[in-house]
Amino acid sequence: MLLVFRLGHRLPRDERISTHVALVARAFGADGMCYSGEEDRGLEESVKKICERWGGNFSINYEPNPMKFLKNAKKKFTLVHLTMYGMPLHKKINKVKKEKNIIVVVGSEKVPSEVYNIADHNVAVGSQPHSEVSALAVFLHEYFKGKELDKKFKNAKIEIEPCERGKKVII
Amino acid sequence: MLLVFRLGHRLPRDERISTHVALVARAFGADGMCYSGEEDRGLEESVKKICERWGGNFSINYEPNPMKFLKNAKKKFTLVHLTMYGMPLHKKINKVKKEKNIIVVVGSEKVPSEVYNIADHNVAVGSQPHSEVSALAVFLHEYFKGKELDKKFKNAKIEIEPCERGKKVII
Image (cartoon, rainbow over all chains, first blue to last red; front, side, top):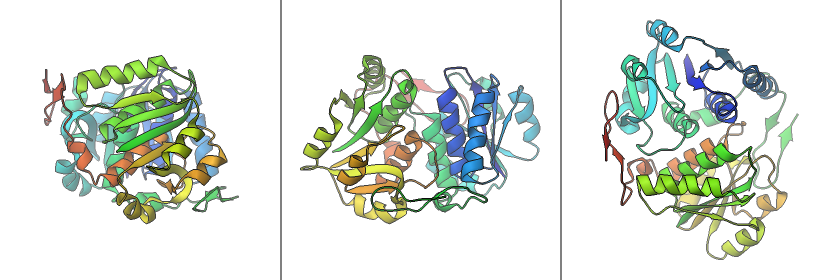
């Protein structure tokens, strides 16, 4: 079980970024995403629509109290916090790969220091500013060893057949 | 020389996504980004501010006529278009890695069919919907073999020292 926790969602500022975080989580093999901050039915609906159309069992849930949730989740899950301040990905990934139940925590602008303390691993996908979307994708790409890109999604209404030019869509 | 071309930037919708695309381009080793669509001094300024602070020679330029630019660039560059409709990354990456001058083209909502035709390679970072931010990051991560995450940026005013917990910033 691998979940993504998106901290501190803000409306309207994070609408698209959080949607992209959720889509990356789904496409790169996570089972679901929780988010905190402002509750956003629009975000949930757009992710659910993608899931209905493109298949799979990806879940999205709002958590009003992220610290309580994460503290509780520690009984079952290893908490991996993605932060540019953490330890380099290549130094952490082999250890993290051995864990089967993981919550990958990604922040927004300001992450409370408690998160750095509660995390089992603070992992940096590079120590330069970029994006929670890219950090999550590269982390999951390393964690699943590239196999996530071939993942099949059950009950898909639409699928893409790879091609050299143009678009081949199977409906 | 590796450049990123961000097609069809729209205001205000793409403000943050295009900024994240630019930051990923910079952090994952590209030399610069061009963008088309709506000209956006705010986007350029925020990227320039990051570069001043975090170092390196990353450039950002507006191109009003992307097709003319790309046609002309084909004389010198291999054009790699990232699209979920393209050929799987693992089937293309070894060929692309041999090329030294590359423009990586990433779209917004609607990419004109000309782009699929002019591209030397249409490459899919998975055939599921996610994000141009994540597609670009994973592509560059594969292209630079993970070494991009250790890249040093010249003349940085600020640097991060990786640590297990908290933040270590060298100013």
